[in-house]
Image: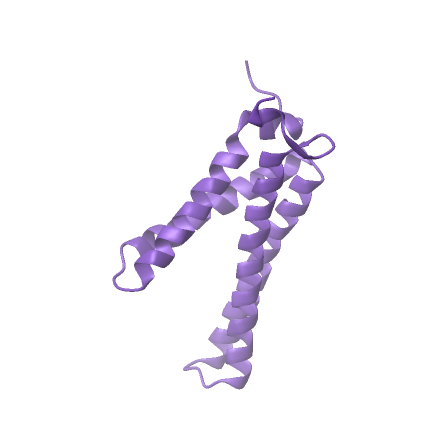
Length: 138
């Protein structure tokens, strides 16, 4: 039995489940970051409370996209791969920015880049596309 044949649930490849887990982790991180910004905007002493609150709400809304994509991937919905791939591609931007920073931000950039590239590899895998019912243009 090859690794492509392994399944985590009936008819769902392990790679698809792993891709959903990556998307869910990214979405959860965005939501948690958004809640933190919102709370600090309301209770803390930011330079601009309204900017902190709006930033928090924006992060929470952006977190909903990968969370919805993760749910769709687990349910093997073909539409979910698009938002999941877009989320990974957008994640490359802050990863690159963190990698070009200095000090303690570089390891964070390495971790983010590794997560994003792992997500992309899992999502573009032919096994994942087949499980989602996406046919190749051969």
